Image (cartoon, rainbow, N blue to C red; front, side, top):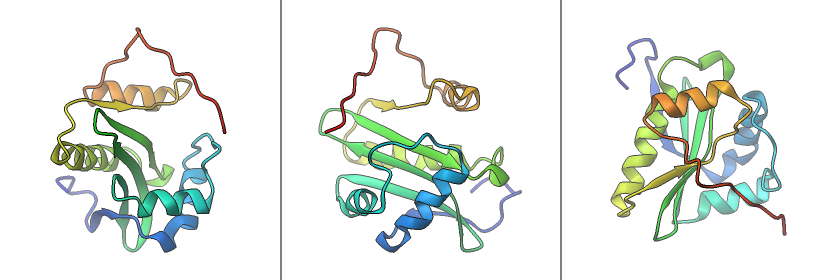
Length: 144
């Protein structure tokens, strides 16, 4: 990592036994809970070879996460989260760069990031990272 203020930062794939710790990180980061925020679904994603569930770790502590997937058509980024005590140190940018690298290696040419619109820090981050809001689209969802 280029940020000299974060010695010892490592980015790696999340392990299935870390599902509960990752859910706790999301709670601490104030991510809005969804229907898939449970240990079983998260372990399934971690074990999926098409998914990249990445974590940032400092001194053995999970401090950030991102999920990237490629459906053969487009890359998607979900659950970019950084612990509040570790924000504004380049962790989110490092996670996004790594998941983009992995998606690019799967031949993704375009990436969509799902971002909570009522979180100004999140929308500001994605704009600063070079992502633009697509005003042509709206997301429709249904829980099964």
